[in-house]
Image (tube, rainbow, N blue to C red; front, top):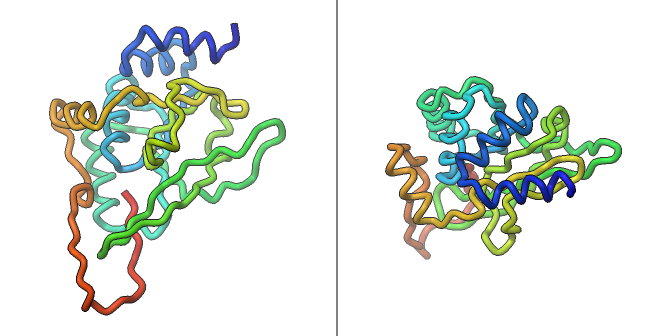
Length: 206
C-alpha cells in the first residue's frame, strides 16, 4: 500500500479535526505546512490547526497590493487563534525543484469597487520545499475545478484538502459555533450603474 493509499484509508474514518491532528502530530510531526487565504473555509481550517498546534507553519497567499482591510483582518485572525508561525507569499516562486512539479494555488481577485473578478495562479514552490505534507486551504477555486479527494499526491508532496466533505452550510455553522469573524468584503453587494464612468479599478484579495 502506498503512503497516499494508507493516509486515504485512515482519512475515511476520521473527521476533519482528527485528520489534521493525525497529520500534524502523528504522521508528519514538524513536516506540515498550511497555505491559507482570508476566506471563511480557510479560517475554519486555521481554527482547527491552531487548536492542535498553533506553531504549525501557515503561509497566507496574497498578491499585492495588500489592502488595509485585509491586513487588519489577517492580524485579527492570527491574534485570535494564537498562530505563531505565519508568513506571506505573493506566488512568484516559479522555480521547480528537480524531481518535483509546479505547486500552485489559484486565487480569485475581485474588483474592490465594482462586480467582477480575475483568476491568478500563485506559484509557491520554494516555500513548500522543506515539507512533506501540504494542507491546501486557500479555497478560491470553483467547486467544479476541485478534485474531491481529501488526500492526494502532488509531485513529492502529500497534498490534503481538509474540507473536501464540507458544504457551505457546514462552513457557516462552524464559523458561528466558534465565534469566528468574517472578512469585511465577504458579504458585500453591488448594483450596476450604467451611467457610471468606467475606468481601472483596484483589485481586492480575501
